[in-house]
Length: 343
DNA sequence: CCTAAAGGGACTATGCAAGA
DNA sequence: TCTTGCATAGTCCCTTTAGG
Image (tube, protein in one colour):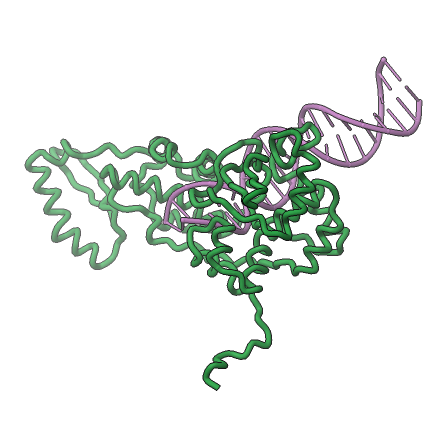
């Protein structure tokens, strides 16, 4: 709703930041308009009116505010997301000018472009964060996004490998990749963590691996979350594979997995696109993301009644709720008779 | 809801071996 | 020694999935 009025023979138009509904009209009539009249008379109105910035300006401020707390990958993603999907449509608009209907149409157009609901959520986040910064500053009262729902994302299906399938895959892999897969399947580590693993992180006496590092797109950083910094067990089945890998790269005293220049892998992409893809094909499997090694570890361990807390710790989850909510539904326990104690 | 990592297309760079 | 063809590695840039 907009209000127009004359003050000292000049015409003004101001937004009330409200949708036109019966209750809002009442609110405007009984409260907002008298307030404006009062402020006009007292001269307060023009003195306090905050200059409302355009999106392009304010989003930069918002990025600056949050940059130090975000990982560079997140910052970059949001930054590009803004310029690819938001800027063109909204960049030159004033913050109070954008209405829920605009957001709705924008979301629809993104869907038509083929973006997933999930992606649209992320793009909304950029927008929402900017608006909440603006609200804190008192620049606007309300975000146009709060009233607009996003289309629901469908759940993705995870297909864990069976134990026999794992063995088939590992026996068909060669050299480093064999050991890499064994580690993936029997530790549940993330691929970035495995690439970033150094021999100094592995303690063969205690049979432990300490995970403090991850590599992504050539960039060495910390693992995904604080809780991902963890010490995990080398289960005895995995042990010989790591020992074998030690024969391959152990004398270099650096990273556990090395490319042919004896440096750490730039990122998982190479392993995935060449070895993993090929291996699945050779073994007659449909393609599955390499992250399924992690899913597989979790499901197999839980399926065989391993302690949930232990599995959570291995995966680096904060608590077992996370682990269960993610993996419990893939577990099939057949022929188990329940409540036997009653008999 | 907010944050961070994996996935993947497209392109470039580099390596390597056979052939001219 | 140069050329060519093929395969793999690195990079950029964007999307999808995972985690808290």
